[in-house]
Length: 194
Image (cartoon, rainbow, N blue to C red; front, side):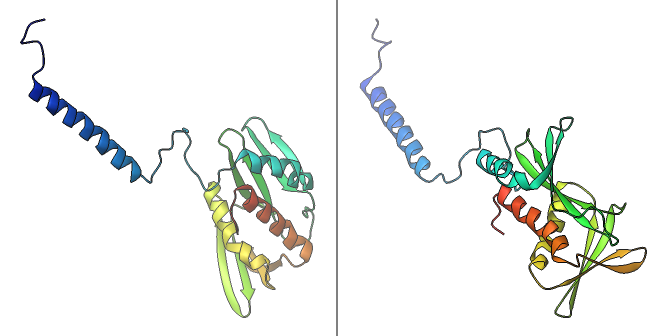
């Protein structure tokens, strides 16, 4: 080994300072890093569910639902077993869909009449709220359910606009429970504390 191949004492001192400085810099930055990387390959969603929530729903709450397997979409559809399917007035029912591939749950509004758009009017203590429903993606259905859910626990009067006339809807406790129970089960499924 020649003399030119060895490191001078000054170079060794510089390398030691640089090496220790780099290690110290990384350690200091690691203490202030609050955001953690998501390396799961999945995007966080407000509709995502965990295995524990899915198992609870399937084994405990799922007993109260009619279940339809949709293998083509890799989803399971749950419809509340005590929902009304035949009535003289219009009905609104809900379906909970569990997507096994994405580990997500969706709530789907199913009106009893053939429509993809309707208006729901809610009268509470002389205050009238009108909600438009336009069938769309999973978030459209979720947002509509979020808007009407607080009124299901109140003493309110519901009407739906059908053929340019306001028709009473959700007139008895059974019809209201057919909405309220699936919504509360859905909130528990997606771990939403409403």
